[in-house]
Image (cartoon, rainbow, N blue to C red):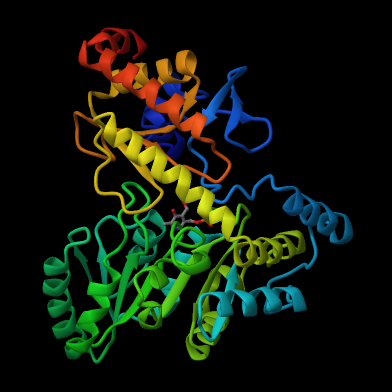
Length: 414
Ligand SMILES: Cc1ncc(COP(=O)(O)O)c(C=O)c1O
């Protein structure tokens, strides 16, 4: 037998093994100063394209005012205890009612973190007799929720309706044999490459098969559909989404999340979701702050318009400059380039240090070897100047990449 920590020290995990080379720069970087289009990194101002503050609410003076006033009035602790026990208030209820109304559902239930809430909701919604059918490219919170499932699960090829139907057929046989039901899970917007989930084609199959649909709309909420009501509205299928999920951590620039659906399903979640039954409820400043942000989504359409002006300028500008932005149908803007991991490191270093552009980079093993994605998140606080500077910087780094300059520098970085 060996000591548990011996292994941990030897094998730091797929990302941890890069800690020495990457920490503080490529991972755990410190972006400092007020959240905005330009922040400070390593002592220099950089155009920041890696923050999901889509509507620019994080530092909006009205938001800061409400956040500050609520923290002063209630502190960060109130209310204490789990919702079911002593952590319930009229404002939690008000926020749930307003979220439900905004996404056109009968009821809603707050969770403290989207990730934990999703894991727990999936766990609560299915028993071992039920079958889950889910998209291959879904977020870790869905994958981890599915891991808890004691029954059968089928994964379909990303956004592939043929593969979806094939798996739905299999799931139907299995569910019939067990006298169970089927839960289908998709994202409204896939966060890595920015495609919308093919929700209208998924729900069209409800005529042929019996299933319930859960949609994680973390990136669609606030950015798509009328008043930012989400991907279901964008595609005209909100009624057919049985359980709708959105987080406050992106467009709402806060923390917390909610599930919305009919009264029965939401009441079931209230009484069966372990992440909320056995954890303290959301503190009041988060709740009051979310009420304020939701009100701004409803009443300030100019924020979403600005977001889309920047998004269109960025995506069209990149395409005009010959960049491959994949199949995005949303604000998420991936730029696909060819290169190995060390080249990617050298390229990002150059982009940050010499061009003042900060964006996320995705490399192997998240995507196939030899490919890198520079992932840009436009927001309402960006300017057209930011867009133009960034496209110029991208053109410059592409030419160095093609000349093999980063290959040489990258080799010295690892
Ligand atoms: C698709 C998706 N679902 C869920 C989450 C988790 O949300 P939260 O940050 O509220 O835990 C995220 C955040 O990264 C996400 O992108």
